[in-house]
Length: 112
Image (cartoon, rainbow, N blue to C red; front, side, top):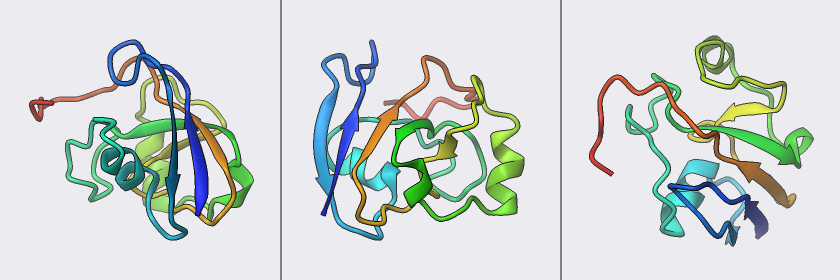
């Protein structure tokens, strides 16, 4: 199990959170499983950027992003060198610290 520290986000997770997740699970699934309603407009199909996160610690433990993920990240709001799509980034047993960006580029509201 890895520990994920989620930094405070005014709308999604105001107090921040510390959660545990098993190796192999995506960051997105770990957040959703812990009740943190991160956007995922494409239902985790690597077709949008609404689940974009910034991996502040533990980035190097994640498998490299695919070419498709890299192409989509180029369109994400607030792109940084430690950006990942949380639906694609799989936990590998190392603890992570993530930040959910203030905004997303979401053409369709999924109602959460």
